[in-house]
Image 1 (spheres, helix red, strand yellow):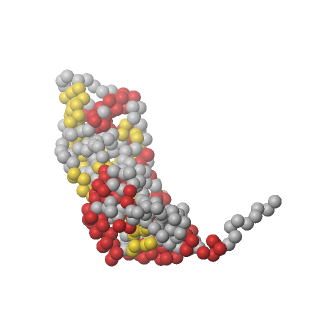
Image 2: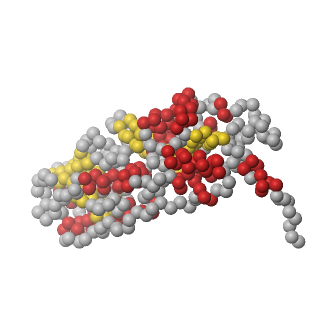
Image 3: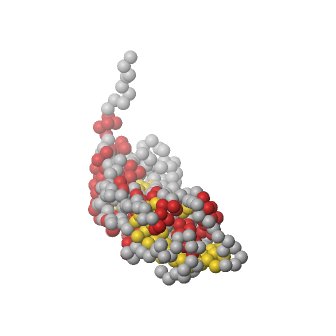
Length: 422
């Protein structure tokens, strides 16, 4: 850390770039001149607003903001910055550059900082903690974070983190040696699911197909009328999949952390069934959205898990076309003007559909199928996905679900109209 006494301070923080956390240097320079507080380094609107949050947090914490010309640079300048994750290092940099945390007494060497400041100086949780913890550990630095993020950061073995609830706690840690909260010792627990494949009665052929799909990681297309059990079977495939390895669990948890979800210890090794609605857009499916930091889509949220597309022919052509490349490569590349983000997307694809638009087979004994169009031809699907499903005959299984009457003849032969007792 290169510093000029009383005028210059440098601290380290972490940005969010996919599931990576590139290093960001927070440089603060204080000099005489027209009082101002300027922020440079390609900050978005949420980062620019940190000037007001930091000013109020400093004043409400008992510090002053001297009438100086203060310049804050977030380097490297070509990396987009967003969110309130830089509030804590900015506030500490201002305090050191203005002499309120003297350089002779306080050294930020070996530390990194993340945290959003509220107006009273307390620290709020920020997304993307897990990638930052992993990178800080590789650089052999201690990461100081809000206490609200401590449970998530503790999922990393021997995580080099300390947690604080208020800006004053961090200042007293460096000035007076006050201890901060270390990571908890709660180890991640094995996955537990509320549903289980053993709950399903009958459906022996279907359950056998699910077992083969689980053992080989094969995709599956299920075709059957409403009530045949397609969704029930898909939701229970998770329970017979192999356990996630530690590396896989960290990848899955990092994606959820970047997406803003809280990752608990009891769900660390938990696989997810991601079931987007058939009205989902291409951006919701593969990722994107507004802002410089694209968000992971449904296919990335299903990484090392199951992406379940129910009512397959109802999805728009553009959405199904967007899935082709991630299914082949196992990742999603999202390009912006200033950056390119890659999210992993190695999923097990499970699709379900009705045999006809009416929902029933053409030879339905009750005559409920009155449509001439047959979904089995899949006329709406794009040609690339049709090829993918044809290849699926070699690598997966095409399951034509039987009608309920064929699955449980014995129950239907019983007298279901028994008289009620008087």
